[in-house]
Length: 445
Image (cartoon, rainbow, N blue to C red):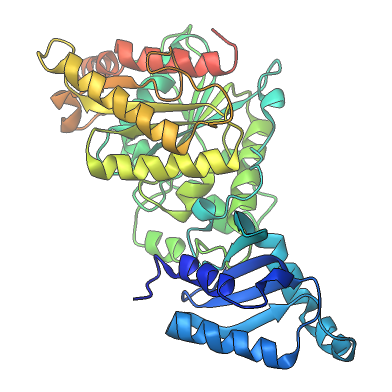
């Protein structure tokens, strides 16, 4: 039975069963937006019409409803020159986006996918460029961009981002936090009362093209609460997702997640980040990404930053997501692109099961990285290698954080004490270790 999962192999086998396959140098299998298959054949000699029709019949028999009926030939007879000119743009479009798959019987097979969504996660051919280069990021006054991501919600990602931000600010760094989780915003609620938030990332994406004269500073909040920050701390800023009110859904409905305007969302986010760098003296931008395989999440995880922190636990669901994210990053970046895997909400070190669970998580991380991230043509670090991609950080579960974190005060003694108590919770050794590990990615420790 032909299914979406096996149709590519069935299409390859169908071509390999053709009697004239020796004339083929390469085959591109094109899968369109509904899953139907077309072919682009790079043939060394022109093929008679009868042989072409015979191949169409064979493929139709082999693929059934999955065959679109379209086979494009790169070399045609002299009498078909006009047809060649008509299909040349189609051939160029296919070859601009195809990806080498495998070589069988001296025929190179390529795949060209035609998705309508999730392009940031699955279209990874070629190296992805960060908003600015790593070399630029590590220069004096350079800005480093780190994205925090979890496949499942409730992994403590936003809380950990806040803890890392506070750890870096305490060391004198200037930090910009950006809530790119515009479909389920939450970062701003940790630092501000709901009445303090009016605009944010969502408003910028909608308004900047209409009012380019507006400064990005109008969408950013300074965090200056004396109950949270000391005089010797660095500067802390937040760009919220926006204000969740009666207008929010109408705004959200106008964001082009499916990239109908190719590259628009990445370009808009990149321009926003560039404008932030121009307006603020920032050492680290920490981006809170949407959970799951969300289009915007794919951009801010794999296309914009200089590194990523991936949160999960030792469940199958969590590892399924982390595996795909690591695969996407590996296909779009060099192997030295920094990634940190975090076992969030794990048991406390005092637990009798802590050591064994820590080993199991590390062992699973090692297997996943061996199979999906590390380049097997290069030396692979051992299981116990220090701060390798597969070497996780561990954030113990803390029930106090489930009650809701509020890092802002109305100035009363009671509220000040509450903020300081939450700050203490977020100043744990685990967050400081994560912050210092990120610094070492850029030679700053």
